[in-house]
Amino acid sequence: MSIEAEIRNRLSELQLRRVATGYTHEAAVLMPVFEKDGEPHFLLTRRTEDVQTHKGQISFPGGMCRDDESHEATALRETLEEVGIGEEQIEILGRFHDYLSSTEFRVVPFAGYIAGGFTTIPQIREVAEVLHVPFRTFLDPRLARVEQRLHLGRLVDVYFYSFGPHEIWGLTARIIKDFLEELRGGA
Image (cartoon, rainbow, N blue to C red; front, side):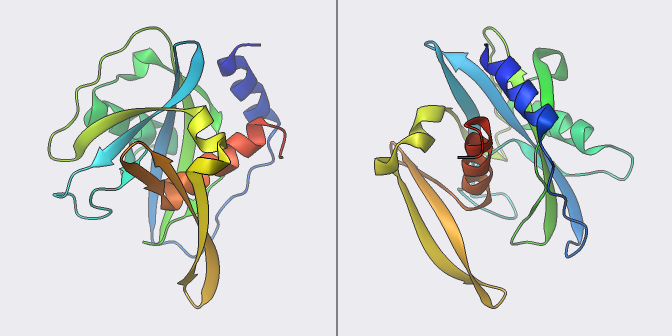
């Protein structure tokens, strides 16, 4: 089974966790998946030091929802704006669980498959670098660690993954961890 069919099937069967309260803003991200050298990868971005929040962090393309658009439309618009990949190149495979960010955003992720070759055009004020990170990076225990941090009066697990000189952590790492666990059957 192809990776896109596997993701589509798994997401279609998923009982979504929804965030109903505790947020002040709505956002959406695209989890762009593509194949390179015969293996699945995520397309991630390293944010510039000029952005308002999460300076220098690794993230999925995404951002705040406009009043008149759906979460899916937001994820696609932000992907075009941040890395220059248009919706005609992306096959939406499904919605994933909602997340509550540390900045009180309800974040709605969508898995999207990019077939064939593609070119990125990073938005220079927001994106310092575009990364192609193989799934195997997140499955290698030597590249992962978990730290407990105090957030809103309780200890929470914060996931970290090493990719070359980069550290992928926080909400992006948590989404990836959960997503790959779902793909492996909830392992």
